[in-house]
Picture 1 (spheres, rainbow, N blue to C red):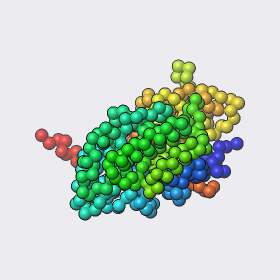
Picture 2: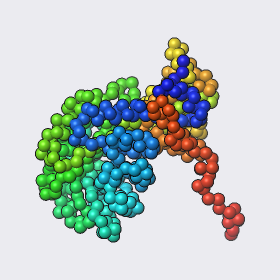
Picture 3: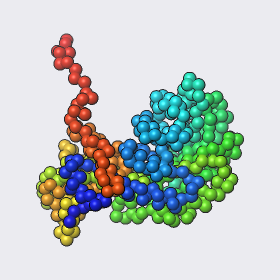
Picture 4: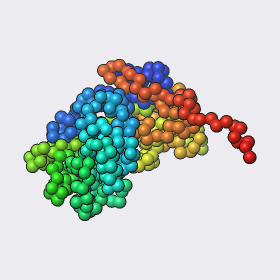
Length: 425
């Protein structure tokens, strides 16, 4: 008995592509996206947050299903453009946009730049003037209201994100003074990993009220409102799945009522982790097993350098992602292990006191729920190991969607300075 995805043994993939390895189940991604779309109102457009998984093939699958793109870097913008995304389906956000990024957004006429400061707004206006274009801008507002139930708050308190609500309303005339900028609406992103439908709905109500106030006080036509998102997935034993059917039942009337008053306003929800996290598995091979002071240690070929989220960033600190021994599925013989990687640091522990089927050298260990913030949130150059390969399974076939880094990839970007200069006095 072996662990399979869409009928494909994980051991076969490990043998073909090597380990460590990320595997994404395309059917799982499709099912989750289609379930979300079928339960929320048609008036709410889904923008996939590439930061959660920037792989171009993963994005292309979601795009084929109807997802639009939310990007936060020049490379992410280039990624979605390479996938032939209509610029009208792209928004760009982030608190530290470079001149090059803003210029590219304007040159490609993307739907909206989500602006996060007045200095940025001045820069957008300046670049748009130089390019002899007008830039569509949504203002990211950091509101006075806060949110409960988010595992990682991103608004409602002092933050680098957005413009504080009170500052926005104190400077309404300034907002409308930029000759090469069209303010089309607002974006608010309050937090992430929300597992309570009531929290999401109340958060949406607050944002829509803020949008109405913004429109009334600016006199601007409200063309766009981005309610953020933050839909969560359960990682730990005390967490339960978000009830997407219940969310749809509660959220759809809120959105529909708003659309009755603002029929020409585009409404957006940013969704990243929720769409891809469950689809992913991180697979590493057990190189050694040892006991230290009565504790069992598994040393694998991929640790925090490949999967930093599993060891503890943000709200995950000191809790284990779900894990399996993919080689031995017999749960009658269980032992407790500390699961570690190959790095020369005591922090390279991806699982503490994890219960697994009896492990032997050469077994494959799978960390589940790993489709979001895997390679992209990991220090892949630690010890110069580089980033792992990534494989997408779709319709019962497997596709290499990112080859693993090799030594030449890493060393090749370095520049060797002639040692003679070190002897100069």
